[in-house]
Image 1 (cartoon, rainbow, N blue to C red):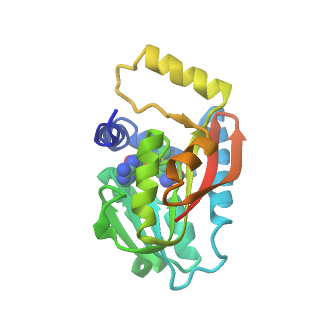
Image 2: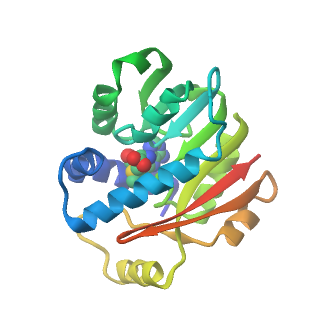
Length: 223
Ligand SMILES: C[S@@+](CC[C@H](N)C(=O)[O-])C[C@H]1O[C@@H](n2cnc3c(N)ncnc32)[C@H](O)[C@@H]1O
């Protein structure tokens, strides 16, 4: 599937099918035990990714690439960053805007659209939490190259790891494509992604977060 085809599936899913579910998952409202494990896993992952950035970010420009309802955006703003928060789903950007505490209003610019758009400008750091998990290795490689040209320090992002369980789900999804056209995660091995980008950057493995139904691998790209 091409980058554009994957992106329009992702947009359809987050902007229509799953908007309410995602809004609830990323709030304090009660959720099922399974979703609670996802919430906890995501909190751990956010903290792991943030640990790769300086404690204070005053004056730094940071892109929250695929910001969703803005959980990472708020943390970055609280550390003093100037944040550009972009998401392909206008509905989620609307929720993120509403949820942003007033005191951070002057530090955050929200945009609906593609994270790779050059109009977003130049950055010191880029965070892409679980927003590249549906893309192929080639798409991730070219996204890192394009973003990397406009990033001074690092791009911290996540992928679905190649565990037996996730690989099994991936093959099952290929054999029995789901009728709701929801996007399917594509598992990746860090070493293969490192080969994909070696002409323009390096990849470091930051480790895996596995909590109940949440499993994701943090990586860091440096141009
Ligand atoms: C699993 S959600 C994670 C949201 C947020 N980063 C978080 O962790 O709470 C993935 C998000 O990435 C966004 N996304 C995926 N591809 C994108 C693209 N090419 N440009 C902008 N946003 C994108 C989706 O719309 C969705 O909101």
